[in-house]
Length: 173
Image (cartoon, rainbow, N blue to C red):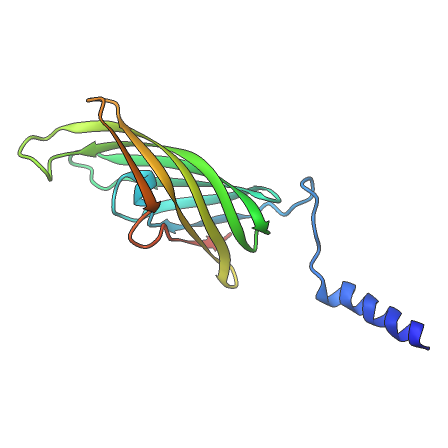
C-alpha cells in the first residue's frame, strides 16, 4: 500500500509539478519585442526598440535599434549574445557580449555639427525573468569600450548599462 501511495505521489509530481527540461535541439524558440534602456550599448540615453530571440535552450540574442533624430540623421544598432549560466530562459542569470555601431553628434556639446561613427564592444552580466505572463524583463550591466572611428578616441565604462540598470521590457510574441 505504501509503495502504491509513493508511486502515485511521484507520478503526480512528474505530471503536474515538474517542469520539462529540453535538450538544445528541442528547446522552445521564443521571440520578444519591446524597449530597452541600454545607453552603454547604443550610446544614447534614450530607449531603443529591441528584439530578443531565443536561439537555443540557454542562448538568447538581443538586438537594439534607435533613430534619435532625423535632422541630422543619427542612429544606433547593436546586438548582444546572452548565455544563461544559472536558471533557464524563464528566469536566471546570464553573461555574454556584444557589438554596437552608432552615428553620434556633438552638436549638443558644441556649436559645430560634427557627426562621429562609434563602435562599441561590451561584456555583460545580468538577470532575466517574467514580470507577468508574456512580459519579460532583462537587466544588464558590464564593461563597455567605445571606439570613435573618426577621431580615434577611446572610452571605457564599467557599471549598469543605463540609469535604469540596463532595463529591457519585452513582450513575448
